Amino acid sequence: MEIITSEFFQRALIGGLLIGITAPLMGLFLVLRRLSMIGDTLAHVSIAGVALGFLIGVYPIGVGLVFALAATFAIEKLRKAYKTYAELSIAIIMSGGVALASLLFTLGKGFNVNVNGYLFGSIYTLDDIDLIMIAIVTVIVLLAVALHAKELFLLTFDEDAASVSGLPTKYFNMMISILTALVISVSIKIVGALLVSALLTIPTACSLIIARSFRQSIVTVVIIAELAVVGGLLIAGVWNLAPGGSIVLLLIALLLLLLTFRRRITT
Image 1 (cartoon, rainbow, N blue to C red):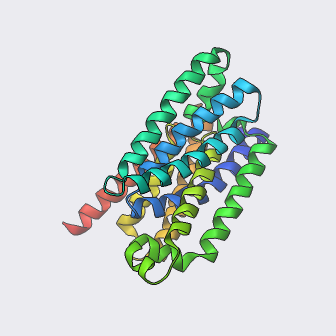
Image 2: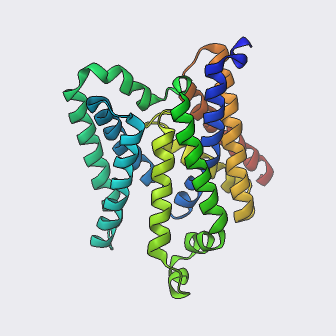
């Protein structure tokens, strides 16, 4: 277990633990509002930004963040244009993100190896700048959730009632989308763009089985995500496996275990 004392593993653990707080928190709001596909969409758009960052020699995660924020505003605009078919906005932006990423890949074939780390995760390569970015996003998300817990609760479960009561729903909708974009942008180097949605959704799926209140769900999603992050990193480190994939598969194993346990109780 010498790997635990390694500096790169400790960096990975710190980054993973921080994302294990923010990603499932934002995922909880998205899943309960039936907007879980936004995670996949912003992840694909972020990859286009990462590719452009490599191409022009600018910090890739920073460019990916800009792309994700731009996609957030675009989704909100399209949702207003297609009120009856709001899911169209997600499909359109995802398609555009994938198309742009593929175009940038062909323009910069020399950085394809580096981009693969953002597609599937490269948590062992986190540096000081990455950790600072992750820590800043974590603080922002926690402050936003703590200061607006009641408003987010009402918006999540009854947006119409929230609007009637005078809550600025447009503002809070945009806030949730922006926070999600921030989390996804800093998460893709940890679990990868192709797997980041799992960290957003699977802890919530687990909490829906065992939590009995919204407050319990908030605590449960974080605990489950942290268990998966720590366990996945240890498994990957000991057996030399892909960290991102190990974290996601452990999350799925926990979900299956909870589903099996629930069935035995109800039968």
